[in-house]
Length: 132
Image 1 (spheres, rainbow, N blue to C red):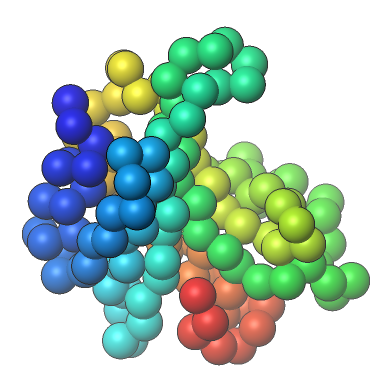
Image 2 (image 1 turned 180 degrees about the horizontal axis):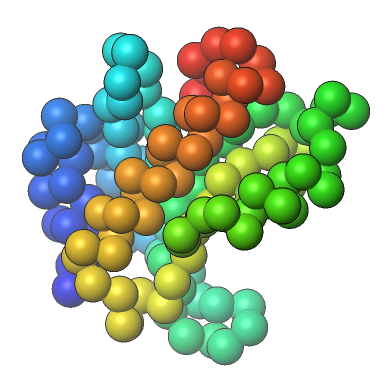
């Protein structure tokens, strides 16, 4: 399966935009309700755990601050189907990942949509704006 083709087709299907940077990185801008948008980064890389090809989708939520309770984030993680919160370079993000050789196109679409919706939901909660 060509991941870039799947992402391009999905972006076209939902009225979003697709931008490819190279064979390993691209972004999909996902339109959401209330005229909001969320940018999802898709990266194809080698898993640091198994060494197998891994695909991950990530979207920024906000800068990490003292107002964000890490325990609450861990509790929220239990409610998500594919996603989880991560903290990277002082940023709170929502990320979903899978082994790229066993994922289906439908799962890719679900992951992108979930990452975008959750990141937007928590971005609005923590910042009150549509930043990313």
